[in-house]
Length: 472
Image 1 (tube, one colour):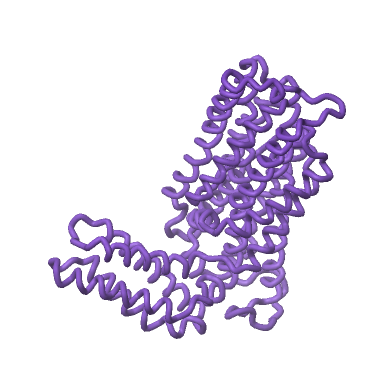
Image 2 (spheres, rainbow, N blue to C red; image 1 turned 120 degrees about the vertical axis):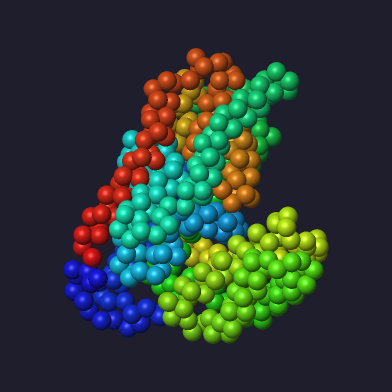
């Protein structure tokens, strides 16, 4: 499946012999994922600084780099659960078994579709979800992949789980912000919280600290959630182009893996001696034996061997979960803990990201936050409601946004910072003076972007995959 570009042989990279044209596409993909996260920085993170800027808690020249720094920290400390959830939307294992050109089609269609829609909505100043855009693009590319190559296609159960999270989070943001605003207005009754800043007004010291704290939390949790999506994209590129090098965490010590497998094997043997023969137990035992044989040589695997080993590890993890939860197999609580620990170790072997990947996304997101933020900030600060944000509205929206995003990250679910914060501000506005306080035109534009993002990004990615596929 040679590309139409010149076929110049270049040295091996990892265990894959990349031709000159494929190497160029590889670096184009890397550039695109950095660009996506950069755009995400000034598209989504602008939401975090809008409230502190429009309540005069911080000046833009301080608020924007402050937010960028905490986005950077959020990516670094947020783990990879959301990133791996994003990866599971696409048929990654099938992709590994096909020529690298197919992976290039998949990656480029996802990235370019996401960037086009994000830049378009940013230019129009419409707060739009990068999460919705990325997930739609992944679904579109996966549908096109299934049409050409068959296989499992879109992971619809994962897509449904993520879709529910994306739909429910703004509804929760609106309701929670309205309730919190009602509490501040009718119970706390602190008049200073409801002041609308004019001219060079600055919030009182304690209110200013509250607003800065909430901005910091939203920025940090945005990094820990949205930043992970960039980590997932970069890992998709690396696994698609260099599966033998990046589809497994080769730095995980062999003795740690073997020790975990040995403990699991003992639990299964004990189960086999106290229960009647069970297919899942027998199958898991056979998989453990096969994996143990291969562990010592995993650093020298070819792409095909990596693919086989990764499938075995994932199959064993799935079987251990089924055994642990089965009502037909009698297993002691301590042994169930052993199985859970083994599942975690096996998952860490396949679901990981190198430090340099996390650092690349952190820097891209942090720098992006500092550039191009003004369009979205203007919409958030001035156009959702018919009046300027007061201190209580800004703090309420950001407290709810930080809590929602933080909890979602803990559960490994992606959410839209844009939708959560925008709906939080709308909820706070409604709680202040009812629906008459909302700007109908702005809300219609946001709602239209919300409705269109998923189908447009699906079609864009699907179309781009078909176009790119014509050239391989």
